[in-house]
Length: 330
Image 1 (cartoon, one colour):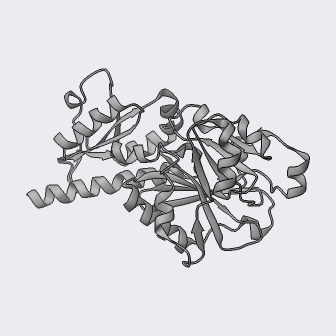
Image 2 (cartoon, one colour):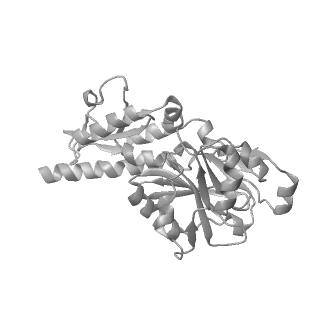
Image 3 (tube, rainbow, N blue to C red):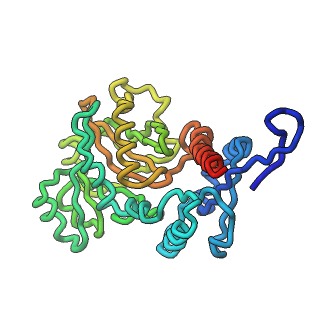
């Protein structure tokens, strides 16, 4: 798409300026939180045009697009986007469906962090010890004991499908209560982290860290007094922000920038994704021991400070690439 404007010599002639056309396929909830008015105004000023994709029409009949942003679930939609990627290589699809699918399974999503072996790079990054339970809840206590996991344990759904249920977390505090859980699920050792979680937003090469309140530390005496299974409070809400809280500096200190840059670069490459966030905690009593506990695709960027500028700059990198390609063709 093109708009008319003054040419670059300032003589009032007409110059056709190319807009960067971004087709988007998002749920109504995601559209409302992501495409906020201030973001759309800034993007428009920078020559970016957002166009809604009609999922009831063939994707190839719509556009033309320079970029497609999407976060819709289901194999049918994934197949449509993948087919479009193959037949329209000139369009940048953010991100490939097969790569996104990797983060829909908590059994495998953290394996890339394990494989990185970031054990001595401005700190250590690992993954809490975890195991998968597929069936038979009565066997869970024995299976956990055999695996050597220690209480308390965080119980999570295996499949991340965008539903409220898939984001539910529970804390299991005693052995007998483990058999009350409903497989399939992932059990992950709870690591004391002083009640602070770092949400690390990745937008292409850009990194933004936000502190969130999380669950307080748990000791063995508390475990003995409170047997059972307890739901986790949601920590993704903007209301749970700890950015302006009066915290112990040792607790509030964000992970070292070189560590985050290395981690995000490696995960972008291994996951094949440009848009995701990492949930990271620092082990209580340490300064440089961190754990990645979750990775989410296309998270709630509307809760990220300065997201309008960061995301606009990210999209503009594709506009520059487009102009370079046109220049080479000329």
